Image (cartoon, rainbow, N blue to C red; front, top):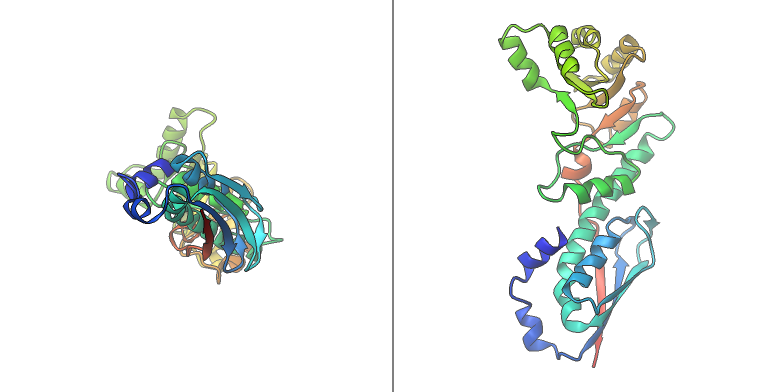
Amino acid sequence: MVSAALAEDAPWGDLTGEVFLPAEAVATAELTAREPGVLSGVEVFAAAFRLTDPAVQVRAHRADGDRFAAGEVLATVTGPARPVVQAERVALNLLQRMSGIATLTRRFVDAVEGTGASVTDTRKTTPGLRALERHAVRCGGGVNHRFSLSDAVMAKDNHLAVLRQQGVDLTAAIRQARARLGHTTTLEVEVDRIEQIEPVLAGGVDVIMLDNFAPADLARGVEIIAGRAIVEASGTVTLETVAEIARTGVDVISSGALTHSARPLDLGLDMTVSA
């Protein structure tokens, strides 16, 4: 992923650096936090410089998952000026993106502290960057949902709509799906109405997702399920609503906002160059 980003940014080298910077110039740069946050992507940041020129050295002063304050120096970069300048934008873009996700995730996790609920991401990630963004969620204290469509069975509203149109009984369909799966594969079904819960439980699911339920209905759903499956709440989860959702007793709260709405963190690379 880092190699692809570097190739996109400088497919035939950095023309500006080649004509303005002496080949023998040496750069020292400090990665400085311009706002507080949670760090994620230190190895990705370092890889951008290393892949541009192995002579560039990156010394990290903080690790992924660490909280930091505004003004802190998080890493120091030293090496030939040309590759340091060439890799700077890609290194910062990825680090700012990942640290923004980690910081937002930590705010969600802090909001549900003490409730027993975990906060997880969704597949609403940037195409091609899912592995990095999922790592950032973990750095912020969250957990990961299924990584891809190949990892678990998750029947959502569109799947159930097709079953209804075909006149297929929901419980029977879930049982048939279960019979086709290995014992290590998780089966999850999304419901959007209280009356769907019992038929889904009768099919033998591992996880029930209560989608866009009001808090009172979430609490009622948890009561009905009564430990017979893991209860996941989803649907328009925000920082303003996540604590109330967690207090209903659900086990997991999934939010696409962790990745699709995270703002890149303001991190800067302050550089000095010497001959």
